[in-house]
Image (cartoon, rainbow over all chains, first blue to last red; front, side, top):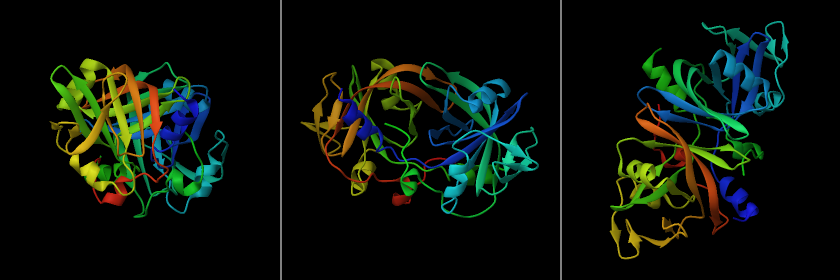
Length: 158
Length: 158
């Protein structure tokens, strides 16, 4: 297999952009992700691949709970703000206001939609872990189009 | 959780459109899918959720091999042609010309890009099975934009 061709083919997978949050004993964790898809209607499951060597991974593996926020078309700043870890200051995470979900996970108030999930299975072995998780709560705050990875000019894949 | 809100939030996940092909003893199997994402750089893994009650699922579960074809911006007809199973006629599958990959999986010649994968793990439990698979071969035939689910006006998710 030619690695350049493999990269080019895999970069033709279409993605949105999302900010995932979680929490463990050391505090909140967060990160921008795009490797996510629904994986079942009944029960409602999603599959998310999270970088194995990351604070977000540690928090999701420990708490088994996380929230995925959909980044809106006009929120590229929000996506880029979560490229590197999570810094809490008062009621703001990386500068963006948060509330707490019923299960204690940081919930960003700006994104147009979010869903909270409980991990039911995981597959290790790559440089990211696949978490399969049941959606247990969801919210929609605004009727807007989602930002796509293609919109941003960034790549994560290949 | 309000099912209508859950549906609306999950439908804000951005997807591309793909035709997946596989083969078992009974012949070729195929289907249009959108629940797919890369899940590791090294090794190169993808995660794909395939409807548990489908011929495509049976073939992937048996052969552990499948090809994902990226549907191009101008190929909505190709995506819709594979909404229902696979019918082989000469060198055509659902009317679209195929070759055979080195591993004997039907390879459509029209899509702009494709990647062949070998299943390394699966997670059952939902109405779709999550297959985690290593990309072992890939091809790019045309430099074109991928079709997105949003482009088509269809939904699969929620």
